[in-house]
Amino acid sequence: MADLYPPQTEDYPTTERSRVRREHHRGSHARADVHAILDAAPLCHVGYVINGAPYVTPTLHWREGDHVYWHGSAASRFLRAAEDMPVCLTCSLMDGYVLARSAFNHSVNYRSAMVFGTARLVDDVEEKADALRRFIENLFPGRWDSLRPMTRQEVKATSVLRMEIDEATAKVRNGPPGDSDEADFPVWAGVLPVQSHLAPAEAASGLPEGIELPEPLAALIQSGRIR
Image (cartoon, rainbow, N blue to C red; front, top):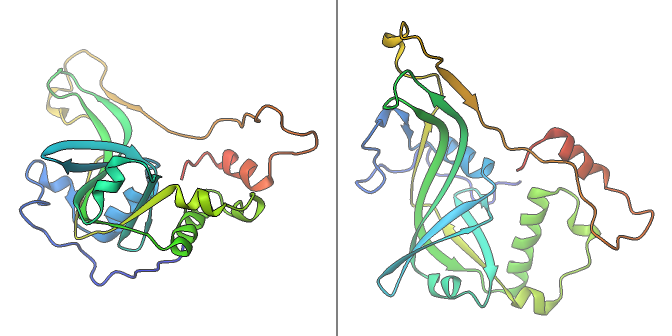
């Protein structure tokens, strides 16, 4: 996807809010590290505070430069309340269970990103429709033009929010158990990798004869990637 908002610096600022306090060697404020995790994760969680109470909602998201987008129903009270609200958006990917010689040293291999900013509603109809087009095209290149065009009512019923990333932190663990000093203890230790991938397609009921799975989707499934 084209970078519509080129970054101004290589790193996000480090603040008291975004500073990594535990296992700081695993943390990074580099834009490239944060963006890689946002782009790889198919799902994010957005945290809001509404009327003094915390809420966290899962949703699909996409990134363009230093901006993250997410969408949902225009009737959602969370999205209606989120306009001009400071929010925290997180993504995480689990890459493996790490089994050590002791229960205390068990862990997981993971990639995570936490980003902060202010949610802005994309309220222009044409801009919103174009943002949704870019979302679909990012997931399934070439699919948008083959679909029934969105109606104006469908665009109206969908809310799109955009957040410029003000601060961000990536954190990654990747490796074997950290207990090599206990290697002589007689128990298996190592990593059980966890992988997410696309499974074979399942056609919708009532699909007319002769409509085959498009080649780009077949290639996407063959590649196994989910984003």
